[in-house]
Image 1: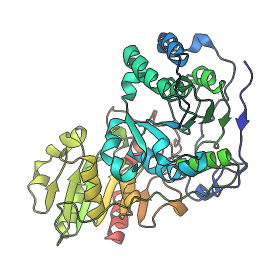
Image 2 (image 1 turned 180 degrees about the vertical axis):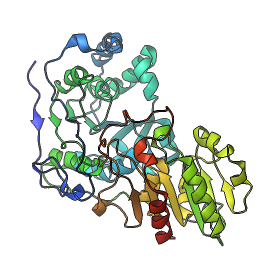
Image 3 (image 1 turned 180 degrees about the horizontal axis):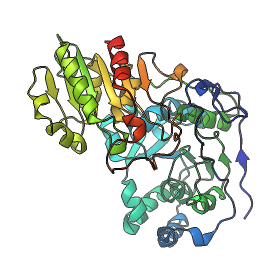
Length: 421
């Protein structure tokens, strides 16, 4: 097999990594501490290192990839497997896809998780949004065959994949299955465990190097588009023109949204800190709006005294995604861990204080200062173990906050919050 072609765009975009491997726009923000893991280049494929699941799906993918299709090639295929934060960072780049790939938005098919569709009319208006179950595609041979055959039968002309942290067995496999004659694919993060699987797919088309870790995702997306077009496309700030006044929050009160949870228990500021913060806000006359999912409700209901206080609006497990955006759009401020509502606040421009850790610091959060509203405050406590990818070796008890979150001082969070209230 021929070696893949590597497209490495020049570092002409603001914030692109320099020779030291740091993004200039993030140089003042990224703690220069600890050891940053290094990606391994796609090398010789070691088929013995392939997981059993890859071998299980190999025949399925081969059948689908070579399925005869007689319709004319048309459109752009964009498979994604994103959370709300990834969406926030992808949208500014998506706005350029129609011009970059020379097709109208309706000819751009975005394969996405089902919950995106509640936002289709606002975030993806005009695009063709198709839901799929990423977990089933990765584990269920029959579902993989059906979904893969649907992809193949579309006979896309172009396939696009610029996700840095991704599963080769899902997104890269979809690009190959599609059979699109033009495939624009970014070089992903490659670990020893995934090296052979990524090399298998990357070796089948050219790919674009969007920079070393921890280049921020916003810059990766625009480095990718600049490489495709051969000209610099300047990055832009995430922005969602969401209407205000649609929530049921009281208009005569200053409401502060407190989102104390996260899908990963370790990426939570200790709930005891949130209890103190909530009580101080209530004492100062603010209305506190609690949001979250069932995963976080145990912490809340272990403190029933909070729910008995005047000024509390408990919306845990009671909002849809569009309703959550309505609430954050109307809020006076937001306090959150590094999870979905934090990115919603960025997109909506709502003042926010966001507690973050060091697992992949600078790659997702904090946002580069030039691409983030000035009323967004990222609070963190540098540690020598940053960039562990949240494979934490210092946490002694499972499902408790990671030390980098637990170390964030309450006084710092409170000081920043009072400065924006």
